[in-house]
Image 1 (cartoon, rainbow, N blue to C red):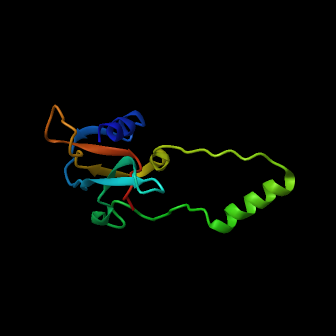
Image 2: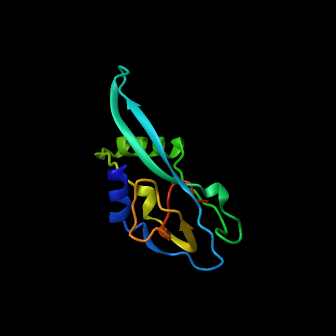
Length: 134
């Protein structure tokens, strides 16, 4: 959890502030997952902080939803093109890549469990996107 909190704070995902009048914060929760190797031994433990986006109100806290995804046909096309052209391919894994999207809306979130604040009444004003937001 601490590693995930450190990554979120180093990416400047939020800032702490008092909740403005008329605004309500959305909640968040921790998701824990155990990754296994092909022989079913434990490879690693994954932790992700997820916003409870299902509590967001359309037209107030979000206006549209968009999720960019790559279809398998595009990946196959790139592989076949690289093979035909003799290109060298490299793999890249980016941690917290989803969190680089800036938000246009004002979204406030309750502080995650495990994060202690000097002022317990403060909330997180999200600057960048979190998993679970609409």
